[in-house]
Image (cartoon, helix red, strand yellow):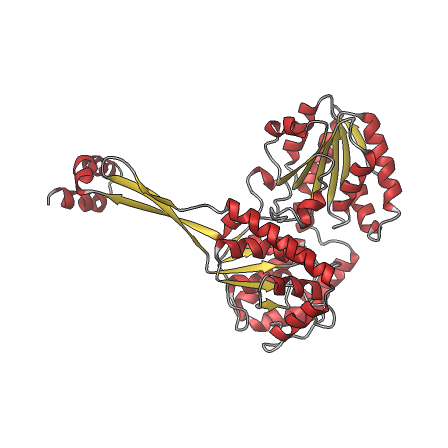
Amino acid sequence: MLEIFERSDPRADARIERLKGRFEEMARSPGGPAARKKTAATFGEELPPLEVVRRIVSDLRETGDKALFDYALKLDGVALSAESVRVSEEEIASAARSVDDDLMEAIRAAAENIRSYQARVLPADLVLEGDGGLETGARYTPVERAGVLVPAGSVPLPSSLLMCAVPAQVAGVKEIAVATPPGPDGSVDATTLAAAAAIGLTEVYRVGGAQAVAALAYGTESVPKVDKIAGPGSIFVTLAKREVYGAVDIDLFAGPSEILVIADETADPGLVAADMLSQAEHDPLASAVLVTTSGDLAAKVREEIEKQLGGLERREIARHSVDEYGLGVVCASLDECCEVANSIAPEHLELMVAEPEALLPLIRHAGAIFMGDSTPEAVGDYLAGPSHTLPTGGTARFFSGLSAADFVKRTSLVRASAKWLSAEGPKIVRLAAAEELDAHAVSVRRRLAR
């Protein structure tokens, strides 16, 4: 049941800190009996996720395909080979034909909205310009090859393929490789393949987890390496992205899903509860938080959550999420509500208040903001256009959500005239001398002496 605290109650701060630290806690814990049994069977001993990931990444880096296929068999129960690891174009086309017309229409509509939005946020080149003979500018060029991770654990997530791959396409990335876990029979979810077909992707690999991240980062005999990896996944995927960062670029650290709803007395408790449950059903580690100025509303939302839970197919997952990582905080003012939200820096922030625009200047840290009671977070998950790959675990304090801009590199442009260098070169010489870098100074002096 959702626990509710007054903001002045010290227990509220303790719960908030637990929410923010849950990912790191899980990374270092061996987990429940099932997780311990699986790691013991795979590695010969019980290991926490962080150590599991480090071993997988190390093995993949050293032995390539051999480790990739060994882990696919041990962890997914699927026998893969160099011939079968990549999904054939015929399988992709067949999957697209198998999906009903309404779903394909929704996939194409989502792709078009994403494409339109991402084109707006893609940075434009800065032409060379300046005064007095010194011109500066910048050009943006895409990475050549990107890897997109598409989860397929308890449910398929073709929307994640669209939300990561379409921004890369808008940025101009030439090659996009998709990695998604296979089912027990080795097949890949048809809706995921249909989404790939809808946007013209043909390079899909039936691999997932930390082994997919490592394969994309370092390359194997069957999976060419990429320059950037994007996409959400399990705790193992997120930890693996942290491990390979530097060998390859990554988008962000996307851990368990989060929603925080700021609500005043005008909010509909049934809608608030439904929106909180929409994220709670993702994962037992997901968090759903209500921050409100109305204790009466908080109590009604708690009742609604209990009522609505019974009708959800994933109610056991949502129940665990609400019980362990759900929270209600009652504040004295909307300003105080915003400060609580900023301290959590949630992945998804809903403003279910009479005047949501008035709160925007007070919000400093959030992955995405959904304004008004007609804008449930699900709009952003599927159709709005901004990517739903967003920072979690408080990392919205310094990460942004994925966009086309993340798939381009900025290269500075500088052009100096001889006249400018003649006038300003002595300053460069003086600075170089201060740093005792003689060759720097000489490179300028030789030009000044011409």
